[in-house]
Length: 328
Image (cartoon, rainbow, N blue to C red; front, side):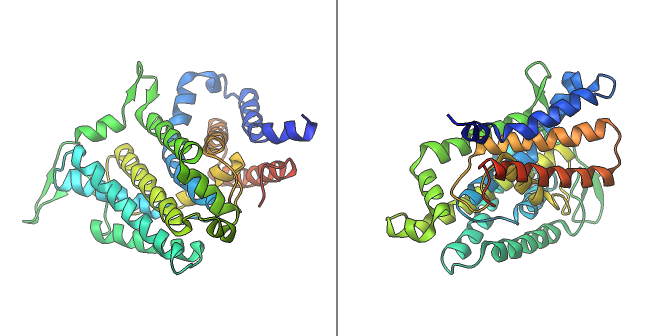
């Protein structure tokens, strides 16, 4: 194996290792070495990581989904509306919200697949539309345990058990449930991309649309599936977000689509499609999560953290392009 090939395989890990080394040096008087710090990182990246799983599938197919943040917001509001305002049990509310996410994702996919509209334009329109849906459903306000009754009175309702379950911890109080949801989402995505025929179709369409079509790949159905799956993951992320915040906020999830794209790119998945994988996305999510945690532990201002994150994202992309992992 040549030195170039070795670096190509190790490339996605280099930014993560670099961030961990910085954390070990700037350890905030040992706080970086405590398990609760790492548990917090895994919890904080979970919602964005779930979104990034769906984004990985879409990007592998050669597209982009700018609507996932708004779909998350709509899903969070829908979940709170069903459970808090109308008393639905989680057993029914969760499938209903996932179905709504799938429906809106499929609508984006259908517009990309059949009229062959640009994914950027389609998902930008869906981003605005879904945010409007969230505000319409919630009346522009958060849906919380303080419920507005039809007769005009307000009543405080108990927090449903499904909220407590999703925002709880397991394995001796050491791992957050949302972290396990993220890992399960990544495992499902890996299985689809690496073990199912539709996964091969997704890579083929992303690599060369016309060649895939001439080879007999059902390209339109493949694109529809990619955006539908992204919608499902956005719905799941919205449910987890609502559980963590204990309410449904129509403004939540703004900008999350950029975090999801950053996680995918940091791992080394090609934005031009046809190459990558969800294991790379998990690495990218951890890199971004640990970067934010190290900066937070050392009390950097929000403004400086945003600027440093942008610089590091560019440096990571340049590094990975240099060693063959990115084709931007």
